[in-house]
Every structure is written in C-alpha cells, then in structure tokens.
Image (tube, rainbow, N blue to C red; front, side, top):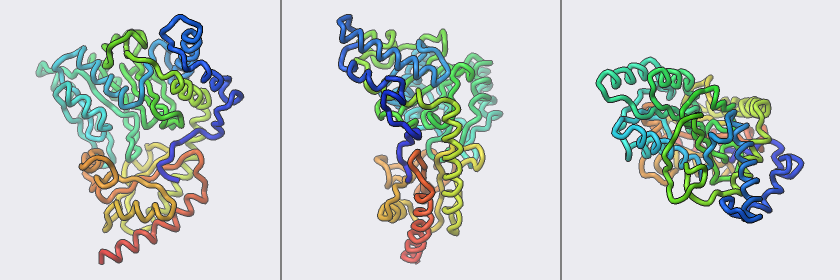
Length: 378
C-alpha cells in the first residue's frame, strides 16, 4: 500500500494505450547518433519520446534534456548555474532534496532560506534575503525551490518565488520530481529557468528523468565527452527509458492527473484519519496545500525503526526520515529543518493500485503496533 511507485491507472503500456510507443522498443538498440538505419530508427523513437515528454511538461521539445534520473537533473542545474555565475551563492531551503543541497555545496557558498513548521518557505523573508545579497554585491547565482516536498508533501509557493527571482535577474531551479505525475507541470507558464523531473514518480521507469531549460537559456553540460542532447549532456541516450517515460506522459493528461489526484486524496485522507485516531500521532507538513498521495506523521513515545518493522510484518511497506531507515547515518534534513524529531517519523503513500481495503489493513495494524511498542517501553 505504501511507498509503491504510483503507476497511472490503466497503464498497460500496450500499443493501444500508448499510441504505438511500446512498439518502438524494437528500435531502441540503435545508436541515435549514427546515420545507419538502426541509428535513424533510434533517433526517430528518441525524438518522438522527447516530444511527448515536452507536451506533458507544457514546453517545447528543444527545451528538454533527457537524463538518467531526477538527481542528475538537479546536479546539472546546479552545475550550469555555477558555471554561468562562478562564486555567487546558491540559495535553498532546508527542506530541499539532498541532491540540491549537496550539488550546490560543492560548487558555491550556500545561503539558507527559512521555513516554518509545515516546511513552507516564507516568500517575504526569502525576498529580503535576495535583496540583501544584491545590495552587498554578492548576488545569488541560483535559487532552488521545490514544487512540492518529497517527505511531508508541502506544496511551495513556487510561482511567487519564480516571479521574485525573474524580477531580480536571478536564476531559479524548480525541483518538480516529487510533484511529477501528481500535479500539472506547466514549465513555460511558470517561467522558471530550470526544472527537474523524474519518470518513476509518475509511474514511469526508474533511471529516466529530464532537465527542462527555459527557452533561450544556454547551459554548460555537467557530463561531457560527446555532443548528445544538443551538446548539453554527453553519453549514449537511454532510448528505452525515454520511451517508457513518454508512454506514461502520454497517459497523464492534465485531466488524468486531476482525476488520479482526487482518488489519491480520498485514500490519503482516510489514511490520515486512521493514523491520527491513535493518541500522540500528529500530521506533518501543510494540512491543506500538499501532495495528494503521501502523508507524514510523528509518533509520540516510539522510534521509527520498530514501527516500520511491525508494519512490515503486517504487509505494509512504510518509510521514515530516521537514520535507521535509510542509507544515511543522519536523520532527515527536511524534518530537522522543520524542527521535527525525525527518529519518530512515519511516511506513508498511496499509489494507483491502493484500495480502501489497504487503508483498512493499515487502520487495523497501526494502533496495535504502536500500543505494543509503547507497552514494551513502559
């Protein structure tokens, strides 16, 4: 039920559902940079996939750089800004994904943007920081701003941040990876300089993503050694992954996204109600302006690891921001920035195959797991 990839409803990926995209897999073995027949076929498949991804993102195909994942896209955005504005600080909130923080940390001075207890950027405070840096002669080279948070689901005031940056001539990068497939992503209307997306959050294949570049903006490539992707990313393109991303993009019209969001929100609301029926459980993040498919909680009196193990025994896969539940030795920087004890957090998400029965199974298992653990501690 939880932490599953959110494949779109009805995504069978056959020729009828995808308009023939799946049939192009036969051409994916060719090198799209070559002029022989196999190469031309692969190039055709790649560019048709790019066009479909661009339509999904409400932008032009030429603005889409295909990457191996969202993390690469975020790193590419940070690199491009650092090369365009060397030595100028990069700004981000503590709730940004670690890829944005670590990519910029290696390239530029970091300036923190404050967030409140629900993980939301205060636009007025952010603008004051922009103006202070400009007045001191140290203009920002880049501002990172998530579309929506990957742990607590809070949707950021992205349009306001982008508008403030554009007025001041500051590059802004929108990390839309967590939002991809769950919100409409209108790149050109938003006006951001750079936007990162990943296929697997929308139900596409892992290992496929894109960096979308504002029209007219020139960026230096992070990966060099060839002229692929119009000299913006070197390396043999993963044609098969691009076709998979495009297949999902074709299914996910704005109307389909809105329909899935309504279904996911109903399930998530029931999930939240079941979790908060247990004493000492609190919802994290914005209670209203949030992604429809996930919820994060803090649980008084018990740590995350035994809760995760107890739920796992009941067939429920969950996640936590605690250090025990990830490869990192440090707890979630997102929850830390929000002033939350990450060692007592629980993250749950719903997907296309989640049913009301799954929610009922959680509602039955969760109170038992928590009460047994609290009894052991007592």
